Length: 220
Ligand SMILES: [Fe+2]
Ligand SMILES: [Fe+2]
Image 1 (tube, rainbow, N blue to C red):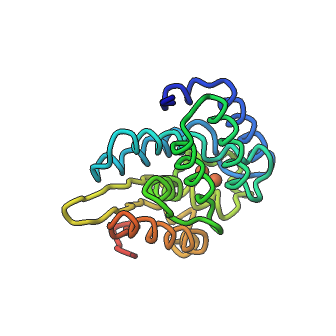
Image 2 (cartoon, helix red, strand yellow):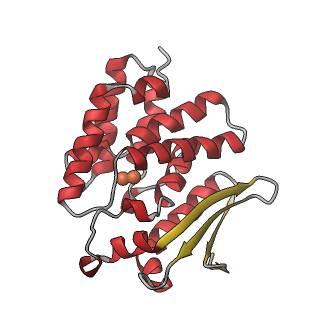
């Protein structure tokens, strides 16, 4: 059976896990990982594959992986990619999704977390790019600037963030406008160097070059 993104988005079961996972991350002091984050990941991951000419089915699998990629946080932040992949296997199998499609989705989910991430296939590569580039002020929950941690500072400082793909030039560029009152460009690097290198590997898997522009400066 072909399981659509629409069916996944409307699943009360999946929505419950996304909500509960985000509650746990809120308690742990992490930035927003709720519907705003996962919907953005679903849309951006699919859009990358659309622009590169991948078929509609691959695009749909990227949307599903994007929407479900952080559900493992409901168990624990640690190893949430692997836990989330196992949860997604059970849910999608129960919904009647074909094994090859389940495999593509759980491969992408299981390979998205910073330390163990790897762009093993185009869906995984697109998910890594979508997830690691979601930097924005609205992800910060902490209202007290004094108690901002480095993740809060970096996200809060991001006044504008834009990911754009230029197929002819073979590039995918993350353009950020950072308010340096809240975060030095070096703070950004301290947190994001690993993620940006991951983006570079993911882009290479899609035969693209990853570029990073912060406040008009080309840094990668
Ligand atoms: Fe994650
Ligand atoms: Fe995520």
